[in-house]
Length: 239
Ligand SMILES: Nc1nc2c(c(=O)[nH]1)N[C@H]1C(S)=C(S)[C@@H](COP(=O)(O)O)O[C@H]1N2
Ligand SMILES: [Mo]
Image 1 (tube, rainbow, N blue to C red):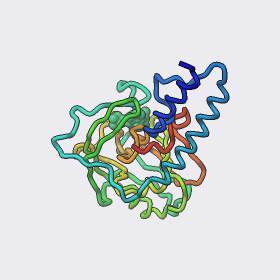
Image 2: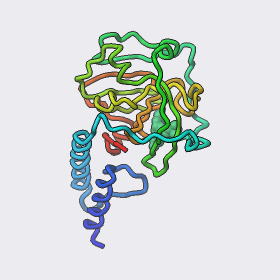
Image 3: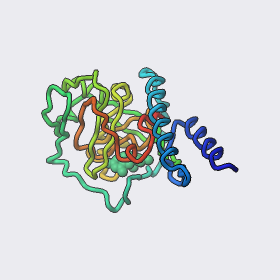
């Protein structure tokens, strides 16, 4: 098949899935026109982000599941293997706050646990082609942002993790009722592999937008990108 037509087909399917690029194993490279292909993909990805953000309904909930539907055992994923997971000292842990937040005092785990907690049984969908159902609980991010005096008119909330991973989400998604600063998995504290002591749990977005072992949270109007996002994964990535 004409490689141009073939690429167009791939991109149409990727657009339909809301995943314009970054699927491992898919090669969009056209050796004859690398720059054009790259520029086109970036433009399409930015367009796709804007459309997805416009279509996002802050009141629509991601599906919830029954306890007997929880996937056991859970499935680990990171940009390294499970034997290399960093362990965060929970006794000295403090969630650092930055950017457009009135009260930037850091939060210990004891303080976070003293806030009202909410739970969910939802699905985590990885862009690599697998999904798991899990039970997470913790502090609703929207409530936390209001508590610390975040400027919720800002566009982004960004996250930095113990392993150097980072990601960011749009403010509407941050304020969504199912978006949690999760502390527990299956009613027990998160383990290091699954994001101890605090991870973002956002069932309205793909797995890679669920940063684990979050050390810093910031509110900003400057596009923060993310570990996979900067390598071409669609930034909005609603699931
Ligand atoms: N800190 C950190 N968070 C991360 C990642 C990572 O490599 N480091 N990988 C992401 C990806 S791609 C996925 S699919 C989910 C997997 O979460 P799980 O291990 O709880 O299944 O974590 C996300 N959060
Ligand atoms: Mo993922």
